Amino acid sequence: MTTHTFQLAQTSEIPEILGIYTSLIGFPGLAWNTEYPSQETAEGDIAHNSLYTLKDGEKIIAVVTAAPLDELADFDWGLKNPCEIGRLGVLATELRKGIGQEILGYTIAEIKSRNFDGIIMLVSKDNLAALALYQKNGFQICGEFFEWGIDFYRLFLRF
Image (tube, rainbow, N blue to C red; front, side):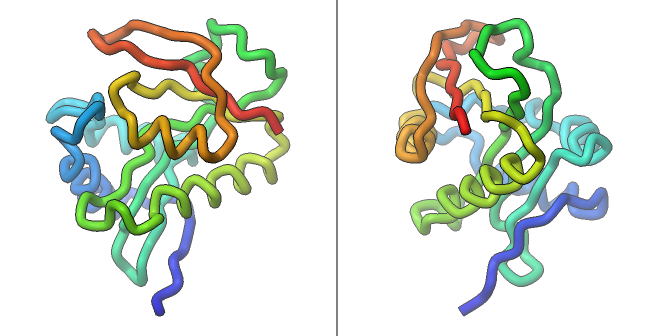
């Protein structure tokens, strides 16, 4: 059995990370397309030390961004020091193997260790698989948001 490792992404891993993003385009409810997330998105996340990978040996099987990026700061979340997560993706060939649950667990632990008081995020209303994963892990819907032509739920998890 291979041990999975969770760590900050490196610039050299961007092509493999983009491969994960691309592998998921077209999945029901996923708001990604050929323009987003992009190489520039990944470069920015790495520059902010906010892009994490989950590896099976040397192969990246999942990614997630976790940082106080202030992209959602205009909403009242009821948290004093939240961390935003986004762009959680599991390589399409690895779906339905518990990888999403695993990387989310590592991400929650990492965020707790950095003294945030909770997690905030947007999830497309049509992304039923993601909504089920987050709600299974205690995330609550606290509102709705429409942007970029997509209806989102605002979700949060308080520690």
